[in-house]
Image (cartoon, rainbow, N blue to C red; front, side, top):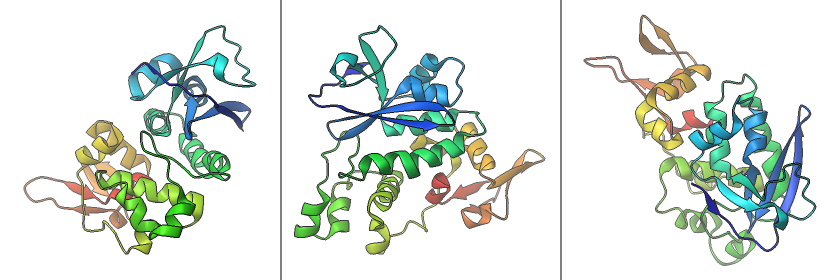
Length: 244
């Protein structure tokens, strides 16, 4: 995608990880990351190619509209990506520190940006939490906005709200998805990656190992996966395996 976005008052935030800087620009209440910064932080050899191949919602923004921006490039446009594309780049990265970067963005960068205002989601109306709490049950109102979303997105939102407010919507409403199990093919679709990449992701998390060409659950993996082998080896997973 190569659309343009329009904003009258973008705000730029700069963060440093091991001497590498990333810039986050808040546009209309939504966080957009400078794509080149994230790709370089994750040590992609060809940052532009990585963004083109892995990011689904990259957009162009006019540099001149960013106050106090310090871009060395003479280009008129800068390519930005939303949070969902940041996770895609992290998952695809082979950098050993990718998991630390993911934790840093989730636990430090995003909370720092959002601590003075409500969070927002890509292509959704920004939620006014104070108003919601005054008029309706907090959890029910948020879930209403997600009634067309899948399980992965509901849990993703719940994690974001916990980071921002310390409240779990799903726990408050006594909702869980423990009875739902997914094949690696299905989990991969949530993240936009192939079954092979999903199995590799589960292996890197220490949830499964491959023995004689067959995936087996580790002790850690038994908390999140179930061996449903009948005629051939097969493991199904709880959705929580994606968020470890």
